[in-house]
Length: 477
Image 1 (tube, rainbow, N blue to C red):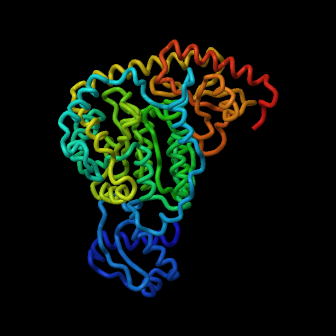
Image 2: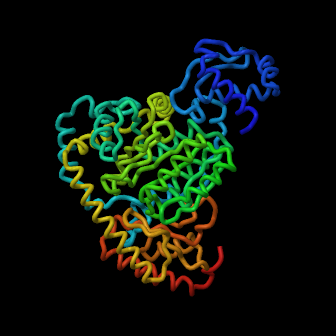
């Protein structure tokens, strides 16, 4: 912990213990420098840290004033209106925009974009909801909505969606976002300053890595095993680095579809509590888990250390752009203030469509059906890839993706261009790593392909690999 952080921690404890009360003015810069035996610049850095935590307000002309005692863990409860959030870098790749282009591709075997199978969607229920919304033509349907989300939509999500994940939260703990990417961007805007260290699984969701890098974070990756990340490696990383946050996908993670064991989940939560480092839990694929399974946020003690995000992009439709953040009300308030400057609010019609479906009464049947279908597709793809000689990451039993390795003489990025011209699409693995170790790997999304398409498409992929290996100029970087 750096000197200014130690000073900030001491002042924070004084505020929480009542030495300084809301409305009090702290001692001058010179007095505090003498008291803590540090330089005046260190005191100013400490004040900046406390301001980003939400405890004080100050300017260059007067000592700070205590304005709040935040409820959320103070190591990360940052204000969005600080100088730290001005020095952001630009996104480092076009990976996400390339994926969006792939979503509309007419390629016969499109294993690139991660989305649910449209043929499995509850079309009857969705059509009924849409018909009702546009038949009523009420002001609510076509109007603006609250930045945090429509009240009855948040209630439906809390009761009908999160309740099924064994999370029992009131609506004021929820912020409706434009998908999980916005959720990650809002949290990054609030918490991350350039140079902050973030620990993630590796490989992990490429969108999360791109957002963290855009905010100037340094990212440390922990290998994903058959039961998730290794807690011993996580402990070692936490002990060696002053970590701002941990990002995890406990269930059927993107891109490997590996799930953490219960022992791993508990061990990681214990480490986060011990080292006072918050976890962002991305539960996008948690609906595929058995009904008794618990997300990290539902574990004892997690309410003060885990922020939960989710999206309807994987369970329903990505075009709706409806996601959520679940956290303490004071944190939700801070995030809402940031969101209002971005898109003002998540689309009203999309919110109401999600609410109508959640209240339709057919959710359990739908989830059970897609769990079975996606599990069968993962097993089919996994077995076929192994037969074709492609090593795969882990041993997934459900999920959307299989992460497979090409011959190490091939660059997945270069081969992607070759295969795309021959009607086979996949996502190159480089974007999913914290370094370049996955340059020979590819992510194959099999959720949208029936068994025959999986067999035919992967057989073609294998033939293309063999042909590309023999093509002039196919080797190297």
